Image (tube, rainbow, N blue to C red; front, side):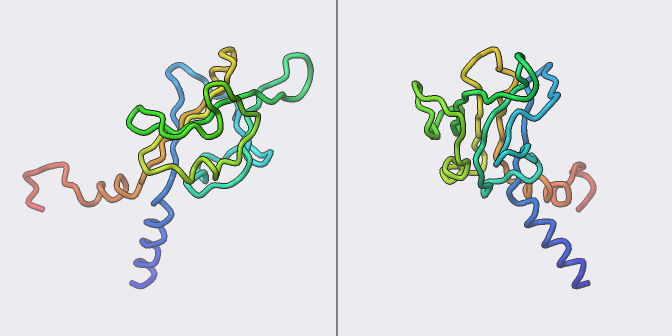
Length: 150
């Protein structure tokens, strides 16, 4: 019984702060344009406590390899920008320490990373910072049939 309780507690805490990513309609994600410390971002492990330098890349059309794309990063809450993350309207970034932005984030915020050049628009990403614990627990606590007597 202790193992079951311990396993349940582990699941609860591991799902407490997770991030999901939304792709635009009709967008095919062929590759991962975002790197953290030079490695592709693992979206399943990305959280409010993530640390590392984020860069955005694309395939180099003039040869092999990749090239860095200038981008903007900001936090959005209730469709309003609440933090510009060092990328004011005239500033663009080639990299940023993501923990400096995430320290201003709340659950429910959107972390937006978008390229400056519109030709790279499909490289942009929106992370919805959610508490998946509520979603996970609602499967067990909320009855789908109000007549079931539970």
